[in-house]
Amino acid sequence: MDEQDKIELEKYALIHLRFDEIKDLMIETDSYDEHTYEVLKEKTDLGAKIGKRIQLAQKSNDIIRAHYEGSADEAFAQQMNKIQFEIPNQIILLADCYVSLRSLSTYYHPNSHPQTMDLFKKQLTPYFDYSLRETFFKYNTEIDQLYHDL
View (spheres, rainbow, N blue to C red):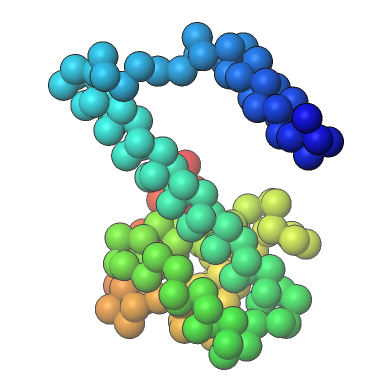
């Protein structure tokens, strides 16, 4: 047997040895019933929702950081607007941005409600639907109260 064949045989044997180590952990898909598929589907859906929520939290952090650092330009806004632009996601993003701007963990210091609203009006408008922004500004007093009631 030449050297290359020996290497291939060794790899083949190693793969089969490793398979024996994990085969008990593998799930037998042919033994699935309807309930098992339903549970798997629910867990997959939950995982997808968690992933999307994490992506929105990251988007909020990226937007706020870019504005504090002065690096938010039109290209950045366009890039951010491609990520989860649907209205329900924008509502979550708006709330995340508001809470982040008001909280102590924001870069330097927490902003007051008027400072936060001013930032939304002057810098953060490109990231949100017009109607959503207007509703947010219209109910800003109630939003401030909700924040304090948390």
